[in-house]
Image 1 (cartoon, rainbow, N blue to C red):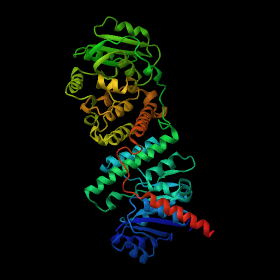
Image 2: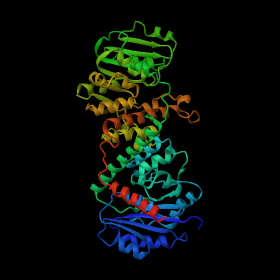
Image 3: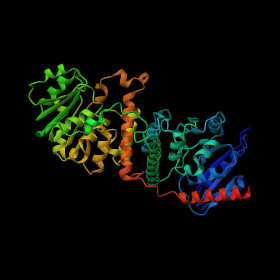
Image 4: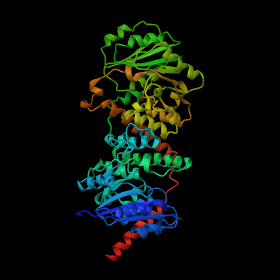
Length: 510
């Protein structure tokens, strides 16, 4: 064949499948080099693989997930590398698409697994992989990842990224996606969930935490390369207004409603629903609308208006409103979402019951099967990263929500200009955050073609993704690159030392 193929297989106690797998691969018409990295084996895996015809490297102790792959890549002689797991007897016909993709010029050819529409697609690890691709601006890859096998790599990709990067697949993937010289594409379709050997619950929990941490580590690569918003738009937010102190001495109230508005038609209904509740003040932040709209609310009981001739940007009005009134409790909503009084009370009741930040319970509105859009994915991932997977897709991005005044005094009202950033700060500060009541803001939200339409580039979606990248960036600065998901399984130092020794040895022979 024009391109020589190397197959890399890391194996730990896979005596049952390693022999049949190596023999199957060596019967392939492509005549591949088969490399088995036997690590920590006590069952004859290395002996069986060698007898079957593989090139075998033995390590006395376990290397941990993915480290064997990195070592195998460092010694492979081919122009194309195919990475497999030792416990999966994949058909050769299913492997062909990965190799062909690299032959066509793809540098990283990924398995499409997990597939949309399956329960695996909503698993926390799939959400993390999907979020990584979204932050890299490659939502087309969905949850495909170098973590999953099979995948194929060009020698150019391995040389550019370095074999050591593949110890943490999400890091290698992030670097590849940030590179303008490497092509990353979907290739084959192998249901590895059906092929993978069943392991214990403890192992699965351990691997879940490892992969979430890996994806966080990969996201740090993207943020370092492209900035704390990963290159996504801020849509002209006037953050300078969010940082300004209140213009007037703020009155002290018990309950204040904050409603940013550009004069939407549902505003009178929203004001009416809020005024019927036990509210002391309704603060309208009117921006980017004719000041004639002020007349509609002048003299209304409980209503105060802050007027800005030009738009202040998404969510900035929330920050401004909270700065203008000193309250024990804040209820925040948008003027284009019709509300009933019974949609206001549960949030305020939750604050009375000890909740500090009461969120819209969106999982009761939007089932998991419908949570496949990029905003839903990044919302769920942030909660997973914060150790709050119970919150689902609930987020400060969505209204309505309620916040106790002590939270705003701690994190700063300006944080509300980037809602997920405020959410991260509140959770890291130890405040009690709960999803308390569902309000359907998906079906009732106004469709704005210039913000939502694909032909316009979906700027609102890109704003939200940028917000979550910014929140992740803050989280990593506060809690470390991997957060509460440390990598305790891998022997990265073994790979580093082996690869360095191998390079020195190669240079010496030359």
